[in-house]
Image (cartoon, rainbow, N blue to C red; front, side):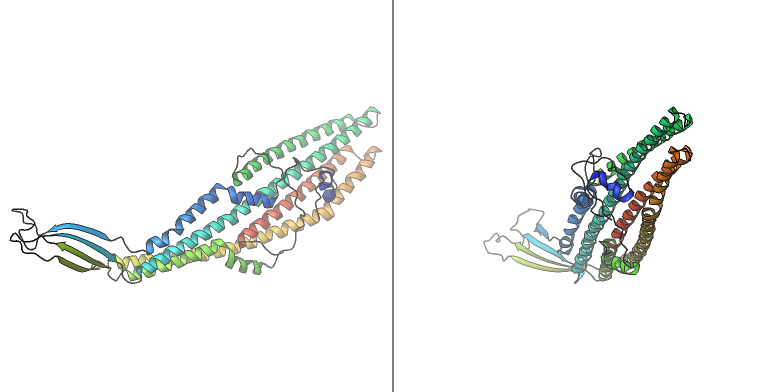
Length: 426
């Protein structure tokens, strides 16, 4: 089923209406354009992207050697004279000391930080997926409201027609005044529904504008999709398998599991002592009698002693092991949640799809035929006016139900796309 761009034919081809969606304008926002703009301008997405850029700088930092220490000093200076040439061991010393972590520690720390950066990349991808989902849900909510307002507008025109007929019959003595009064009451009720739908539309526009990263009062008019046909979905098992491999949230959690494993291995390696390599050059002045004194070179090797391993290193191993288990359980939870999202979205889509088919192919045509038949009967005095109005209101209700079911189906599909982490083949 296709919806043509001509405003007068949009609802007519679907429901037999001759009205256009509310708020039609020259420049219209398609779903793809809305999602593209949101990905470019959404401030929350920009915030997550900045955190990802920050995470990319961490691996090289933690993988580098600790900064060396420059040492300057005076060695063995006599305190009675403070002369640099009085004692042979007095020297001006400059040295450097370089801490060296035990072999493999820097590599493990860098690997863990890289896993964190990979997780940040997946977090950004997940944010993009969820943003596209939220934009789609808002777009289809606005799509429903536009068509719901068109349905109400058409129903108002039909009730006004009934009112004119009732007035004409009353003037010639063939109708009752209460028929005209009832028509006016139903018109007022429909106007109230129109006001309520208009308020909902303004709210949805504000929410959608926020996702697009712009002021909430900017008007939005939608571009009709080329087709609203609801296609069958692939098998749920296939979608679940796809989600397990391509859903960014699951891949992110797997990266966090890997990072926790690297940190546990690093905690194991912390049981081995770090080293410290130092070198110093000592300058000595000549003796007072003029004889020269050789300068001195010192080389040192320091070893950090893990004397408190039971309270520090061993406890750190236990901590990192518990963190690894926690991340593994979080991964399992995210996988189960994805499965539930897929199944729920499929169920919602199938229900709404079946409802739209029933409404479009059965209930709506039957309701419209009933109104046409009852209108003919009322004009010749064979049908009660109340029954005619009720039949027209039933047409209004089932038309609104159709557009609501179409919205629900498209929103369920958007949730399904987000659940599996990418487009689905229908």
